Image (cartoon, rainbow over all chains, first blue to last red; front, side, top):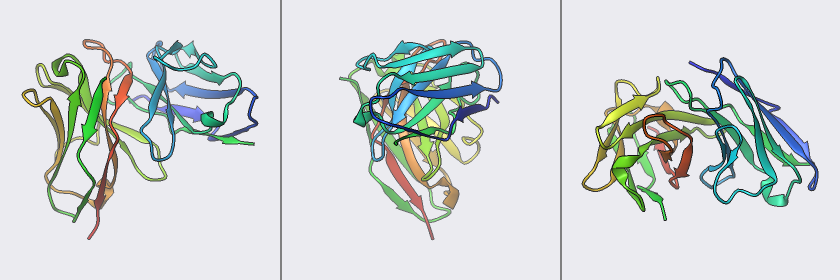
Length: 108
Length: 121
């Protein structure tokens, strides 16, 4: 089973600044890595798949990079609506298609 | 528009059975993997398992063994998650999800609104 580890657990950033979230896999997942945004009371939303491809309707300020075991989600200029929980998920090796434990992005 | 509409919240006692549902619309039900992700309050997301309705192929995680099963009804475009005997640890929010891809399972591109399951004596 592949273990996904996200860091940091909580990230405090001011609006307008850049946020960088990390995700590490315990073994290579190639580029089969997705990022999701999750706000309280809502269903999660797909942001990035294939490690770097933005999903439909996702603003260009969201970008993903990495391959193998190290991945990064960057939000270039934080907007108020971006403060939320973020999860990475690998879909290269089953079972299961594990999520990371999440990074909470909060307003500084 | 692709939609996954889930059944309502459930309050059950330990030992009872339960079946929650997810009706899909806006796409060909048999052409995508559909399944379930759980959120435990205060914790993260747990991928449970998926089914390919065209041939009922199933991929499941370690949590979905024995007393918990996934199924799908092609005639109604509905996926189900069924417990034969609930435990308190089954409490949580269950999201119905659709995965991209067919032969190679991809990311989750559509999420249902969630079904809250509470198991308490």
